[in-house]
Image (cartoon, rainbow, N blue to C red; front, side, top):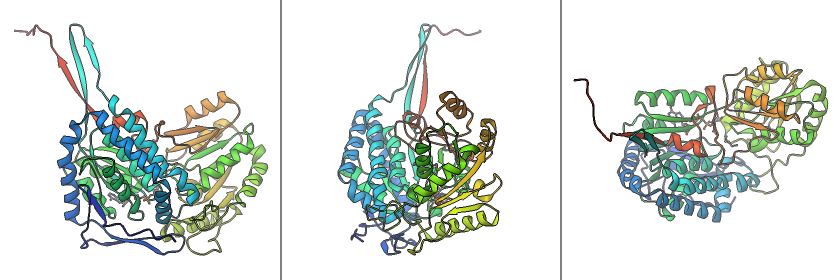
Length: 485
Ligand SMILES: NC(=O)c1ccc[n+]([C@@H]2O[C@H](COP(=O)([O-])OP(=O)(O)OC[C@H]3O[C@@H](n4cnc5c(N)ncnc54)[C@H](O)[C@@H]3O)[C@@H](O)[C@H]2O)c1
Ligand SMILES: CCCCC=O
């Protein structure tokens, strides 16, 4: 394991590292071996207060800068991230266990894209002029104030950037709390933003468990909360934010359907099903874990997916040849194996995998079930592990009804060569993010987010601006003013 040094301290506030070792210990381990990567402390009340005070103090002068000035800093940070992509990717691999092959292209790289995108549009964020006869109105686009970002562990630096970039472009300040399992890369992002010229206090990072997130959400200085996490956590955070009438963005879990019709390009659909279930060892919110396949092609499709999945290279995530790594934690490992057992117990047919990998550690074999029915736990609940379920279907109407029969609504995909059908199916999907003849591509230019229990609001693209700013309306009377008496 490369010697990635312990960060200078646990938290980054007001442009510098800050420590308070009265906080609960927070240890991060390399999931492939269990070795300790870094040992930090969760925020104490005083650290929470320090971070929010810094963000509050910085907000007036940051909001007063022009969009061009703010954008320039974000774009510079994007450049620095790209220069340091390998170092950041190694750190992300050590923290998450995701293969370096993935983190080199998907994590910090997406963060850089996001900073670049919002850096580029910051200068163009305006209100509008509305002519009303001889009177007129105009709107002023204002930042919300102090925002709080709370992250999940599967895409740590990407999540931090997806929240920081639009928040900062709009003139807000941010306190970001990474997942307790992946505390490291957000600190690097904070260093990089400072190096790019970000004023102190505009972006702050504090570590902690759920209670630290809760303390941030409850603070009256906070105007907006953006959470990436599970639906149960989302319900709690949304309710707490509602007490203070705060703005929210909720990026939550899913159990997304992927529909494969018999006229689809099978090679493409097989690749998509593999990406939609085994990338990041299945630890992706938008994964298409319910793979509905039209009955006529099911045997061949299943055989091809099985054959390709057997070629997964399971190994040390730092080895660039590895394309399938361990689960992030003992808890996620246990959850995944318990769902596999439920799948077997409830009558699904185990086609491949199903066990802890012989390599030891937290590896779970890529697992495929067929003969899955809609009522089985593996078809209804988010597993967040490498478990693919095949569900046969006959007709489009039937597949859609079953695909939508879930409390989740994060994502959905369809493979067909009939484009009319593709658009009809997508129009009927109850999901915030849909793909036709591909899966899980999330460019920054496209809004991302869920409907139903999977979320509120959208990240990325111009849509995110609406969630980090609000409009002040100004009516201008040109006279005369009339009255009834
Ligand atoms: N929709 C998306 O964009 C997206 C992206 C990635 C992950 N996810 C979802 O995230 C989940 C996996 O991540 P996880 O296990 O870290 O989720 P989680 O809900 O356990 O935790 C998410 C974050 O919330 C914090 N938290 C927990 N309780 C809190 C509380 N009461 N108040 C404030 N903060 C609290 C945690 O410390 C962590 O930082 C999956 O459900 C996955 O689908 C969604
Ligand atoms: C494909 C990246 C979406 C992030 C969710 O886990």
